Length: 342
Image 1 (spheres, one colour):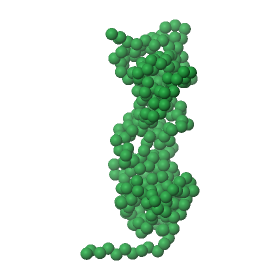
Image 2: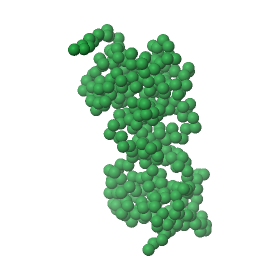
Image 3: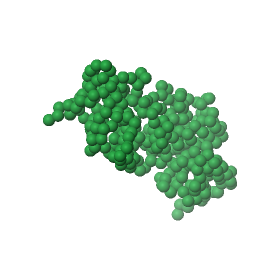
Image 4: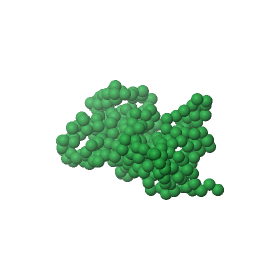
């Protein structure tokens, strides 16, 4: 019975970080590594959700004659037992892994290459960091993948939030967007797609990147940060969206049929929020009630349906058109609706 696996390596540094360079069967690397996918429900992890098709494509490719790949990037987690690095001589070393060690290496940049190779003995090159902390590992992942095709920009924003020294000061729009997603009283609570896995995935309406960019428009239009703190701004933005959900419950609760809380709708509504903030006589007392009263005057007259006036709008031009349409509705004479009590 095999008690441990030994992989001969070269030992050196990648700039300032200790690394091992070596070659090992895909089956072995797969057995002792894992992808630390972001769990949006718990906040643990940091990587994109697994794309099985992407991984299957690589499996088909790597089995062809003449196939090759750049080294897989891994990290030996310092807190995980069952491994050691033995120095040999002349810059060489041995990575010794106990057979029962389990998942000791994080797949920093190779989850889709390794994902479906667990049954193959194909030899693959790897570069393995030794003992990076979780934050250091996340930083490496973000740097490698910041321009990668298919990597969620919302996931990169999530990384920024964790790595920022003072998020409220450095990225107030992201601070406010995460407040919307994390506060249990927010109608957006766990509704923003961060790029990871979540049990509420089917209920998510917009991405974190969409929301933080929309809030950035609000900050620019109002210049609110000149007089209010980022925390106060986050509370005002949440009060606005709570009002939206209260005034337009049908449209809010049926996102597949309405654009209210999707893409262009989110941008346009934050433009409207900027209008309402600017118009307020007492900006120190903006709350949900203020926004409910203002929205109730016109929001029902906007055609929010996916097949209506806002259908097909996209990009900056689409946002301008959507915002102009909503502003035009606001300017029209209000129609008094008589409610009968029977």
